[in-house]
Length: 509
Image (cartoon, rainbow, N blue to C red):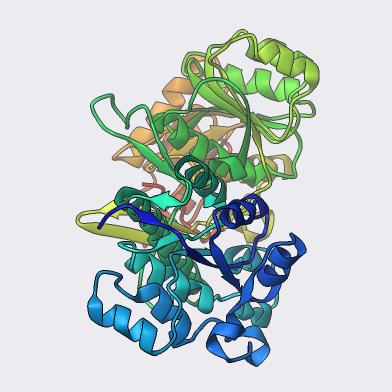
């Protein structure tokens, strides 16, 4: 293998954006250009000579364009080994032109799926000729340069200008790696479309947007993020997000989406759990009351709300050291204030649908499950006790249940007037979680009389409802389903407590 000078190129692309300068440079270098269909017309319209592939194959484009380049005279020109006497002889014998460069941009399969197009339209966007050209050219990188995506046009143009049509072994190998990344990602997207209901118990993940983080969970660990962060957020200000920031941001987004179209709702998260949460008539009051839930834990936290942050709210936030602030939008005045701390990260949450499945490593493999898309509503409630909850209690119960769903198990959430009073998070005992929540609420001088309690799973014994009753709690929401449910029901009936079952457990490990 050695430096190679391009003398011929096959160009067949979907996206023509940025292609013209490449074609003009190739023409300046006296490179013979072969092409097909729309790309051929594009090149002709530039006033540049182009040889139709049909002139090489002596075969027209057939089946509505499904078959254009799939021919031995095309693939022979790409796959031949230039240092192999037999291959060279066969090129002469069968009048096959040598092809030194292949430029392909595939049909936009993923974009077509994302657009909600009809199934047949999606099928027609499965590229056959293009993906075959990419694989052939990348395989034969010893002799052929493969440009496999519109994303690589600018880099390739710089290479052309710098080396005047010559490429090194390393150049061609680098572009081959890019090509196999494109082809493997493309095939993964197609498979996942066909297997979207997981009929085949197969896991294929391909993320082409990768970012090296400063470090992982701790400074001695390497960290990476693979995903399209810019699709989810518009970053307005601040330092780069860390591994731990991203985990907290993920928890914050999942929580606030439960309240997407509701009254102004503000959450403050720390270590993936909400330490402050409130819903009010104004975003300012929602923030003030969320902060009151635990002003100590809020230090260094992640802030998120479901509506625009205004000047008054920004002035309050500016008094708190926080890592990240997320909202659908910020007023100009709010932005000016919040940008006053140079490292504070400000993000606009775009309207992007989250994946329908979650994935995490486990042992020597991975665990995959459907996202917990079930949100408890008033229609789901089954009153288990003689006393039914009042309408205001129902509102608080649903509020607490949504919050409980996004808090680490075992968890208990205490709420009143759509404000988080306290939660017990990640405890090995539900009693411990409840006692932790009560202690924390009282430490911040909250009155638990008339508050409600939410549990992420059933009560196997009546001890939790008894502890809650003695703390002043008047209504309880839980999934139900214990063989000893009646013990908790009996205690509530004897002590004038309303309890409702949802029928849905929300463990979060």
